[in-house]
Amino acid sequence: MKLNSANINVMIKACRKASKILIRDFGEIENLQVSLKGPGDFVSAADKKVEKILIEELQKARPDYSILSEEIGLIDNDKSFKWIIDPIDGTANFLHGIPHFAISIGLEHDKEIICGIIYDPIKDEMFVAEKGNGSYLNNQRMRVSSRSKLKDCMIFTGGPKITSENKELSLKEYNNFSSTVLVPIRKLGSAALDMAYVAAGRCDGFWQRNLNYWDIAAGIILVKESGGFVTDFDGENDYIQNKTILVTNSKINKEMIEVLNK
Image (cartoon, rainbow, N blue to C red; front, side):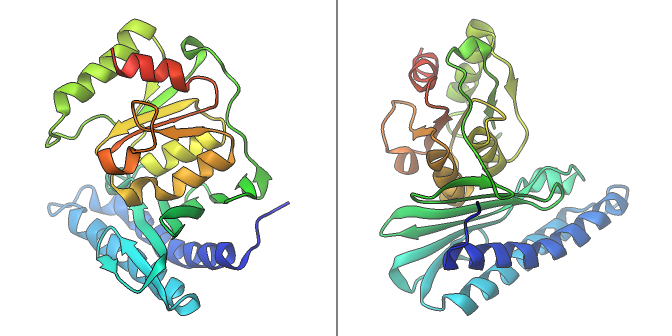
């Protein structure tokens, strides 16, 4: 089975078209690593090019929908439908020629995410979900993992940025996991793919502070439709407002909350 509603098809088409630019530009990154100027400006331009294609494709199909995107901000149209776009999630990986980044699009209806797509163009992995219809990876149904003990799990996080207000708190939370539970922790550099990997059962949980809405929008529906939990660090639904997101399979949410709040 695969998802083939009209909105899903629009999202897939937009991702496929934009990814051609992304793959081509990623091929140029290696040459830029050794240049004096470096690849920073080039990556910024790539981000904007991908965003432009995504917006053009989405507006062509749904001209009345609002759009919130990382680069341009808000295009305020229809109040009930809104696309949430991150053109390149994992920009630092892209910048350094590391093939782990994604295009992310969520569709919000009346302030609830109803569709989501996270596309890794280098691995050609398309993670797609729709409310009530499940989550899929390249048309194969996804489910979260079934591990029930945190000590047996693998956990992802992004860690604090240098400029983070809560840097010390983030480091304390990291230390709680790595020193008390001794659980393997991975920092792969793309929150969208971290959430997609929880949905696919590749890892068991993910936590991070200070993410933006476009970082997590598509991942929210992917995880929920795979049978996982999305909460804040207290187990509540205020993760967008307070920017503390905890994503888990259905069995370790409570244990992760206890570790985070030690």
